[in-house]
Figure 1 (tube, one colour):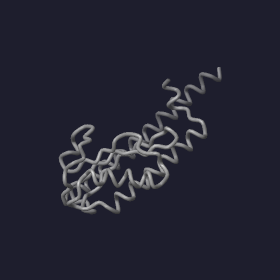
Figure 2: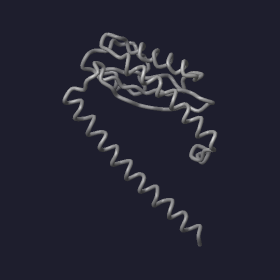
Figure 3: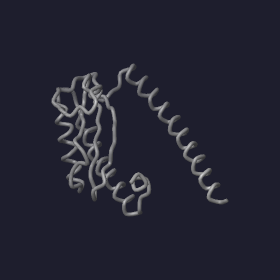
Length: 153
C-alpha cells in the first residue's frame, strides 16, 4: 500500500497539480482578505468559497485557521476566535480534485506585516527547512543510486 502512495501515474500527478492550483486560489483570497477583527472561521469560509469557485468539489479535510495562541493546539478546528493585530495565523488547508487533496500549511501575519521577532523566526525556519530539504534530497539520491547499483548485479 505504501508504494501506491509514492508512485503516481501522469493523470494522478495532474490531479494533484490541479488540487494545488485550487488551493493556491483559496490562499490568495485569504492573503487579500485577512485583517484584524475578523474571525478565524471567516478565513476558513473564504478559503472554501474561493476553492469551490475555482472548480474544486470541496476540501480534502477540515481547514485549520488558528490565530495567536490557538496555533499551538494540535489539529485545532474550532476556528472561532477573533484575529488580533500582531498575531500570526496558522493555516492548514487543501482543496480536493478527483479524490486527490492538496495539503498546505502556511503562517501569515494577521495585520499583513511580520514583527521583527516574527520575521527573525520565520527566516530562521525557512533557512532550516531549505537545508533539511537539501539533505533529504541527497539522502534520497544516495538511497536510490544504491538500489540501482544492487539491481545492476
